[in-house]
Image: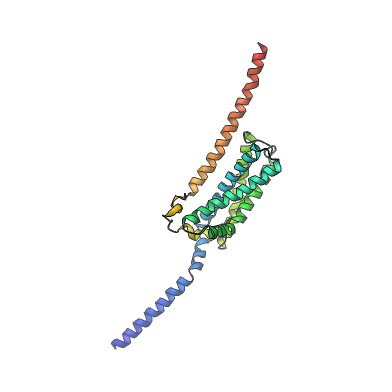
Length: 237
């Protein structure tokens, strides 16, 4: 009787073990189900914010370089778009490198995850800037440029968010990088110096970046506006 009970107990444990293995083997399906849950909006917002930060930094850097070296408008825009992609990819690559992934593997994951999102953002951003009168031609110390950039980036965020959400729901886009974000960061070699950026920090960087540029433009226009009045007063004497 005892051996019969032991046999039944062993069979029960075996079936439970098989069921657990089956559940574990379908772990990717469970993860995909989690992406479909309420967290997908937060993940999509974070992914879009990473792209937006990189695009903003790259575009402004490209415009500054293009203006400084005297490039034409077309070449300046091309440089800005190129740097927007470069910075966008870089911000998404850093967490993967910090998790221990090799550079080549990290870049391949990021290229697959972010290209559509960044392309959507750049297309919409430049289209909005082109539609705002004088925004494209305005210099970096022009209020019109910074207000136009704020509007363009806001619209680009709204346009790229559903793209990232769609990709996440299908296990693509930033879903490809999500598994590495929860990994224990590597605390050895140069990888331990790689910074980590939260969504709040990225949002703060964008806001500070835009407000700083706008402040400089306003100060420049106010300073430029007072000079002629002083000259007229001196000439009248």
